[in-house]
Length: 402
Image (cartoon, one colour):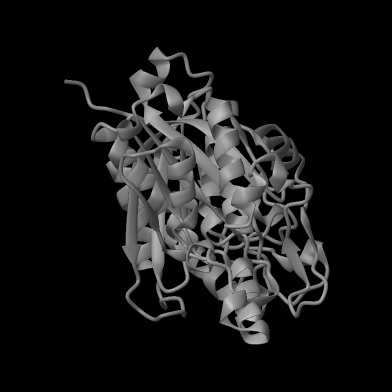
């Protein structure tokens, strides 16, 4: 029996770069900076999803039970299913799953209810407090809405979580599941969430969007937080082709995850485990480093962590100047939604043979071939997406053209 192959057939994007694939991709290729001012916060800038109307995707009864990050997930899922022309109601519920990445959870919901508790007492707290903030809320709500009764869950690994969720989705498909919704969204811009991030040394204090988040620049000064993310539909390749899926963007060829085992927040002094994740993902895809046409880098945005990433890339790719891009310079870092959005960018790059740019970059570091403008590449067949999470998480995924 032939091996089951996991492919991405649907993309749903809700991000600062746009709502839906078309708007997102158009702005991405134009190199639009979608980072804007945050009022009343010690953090001056963030990547914000403008024009999002939750009532278009979530009914009023459910809105009072859930947080903005779950609204994003439900909207992105609806867009991904439409993009793939996939109707869960036509499938056996036990053959469908959802695995998302979670991080900050429903922080605005939680803040509102805690404020109610201390100002008006326990009876004023919503009955939905116990589920609205929970980091598994989005997976649970998607499972209920679309009747996904296969293996469902959530993976938590900070910014690396989206790749870990994709790995589990691919594994489920290869073991017999027909369709898996995966990815992640975040809404970490509530006053409480911003206050939590304001104490981090790695957050940017800049007030100029063009200078706030500049990975690999000599004067990089930190990251900019952002909201949004992406949901992807993963199917078995032959099943997708057999039902006439409009697009098969990319195949999930190989994934890997490692951990630094160094410190609860600080980066390890060397990137050996990060490089190992890259090498293992490439090897599991049955490829060599020379086969990779582009790297979607983590791009932490601080000189120390960016330098470590350059060392890791050099260790894996040697003297070869592999094209490297950090398109989330347009949006900011989306915590658990970041890797999911990078995977969507990579899938679109393979499908359209265009690499989205890194914007506002400074001088190149370590001889990187940093993609500064949208670059058309003939024969782009494999992309490496990498991510690091606070606490030492490292994850990598290889997507290949179909």
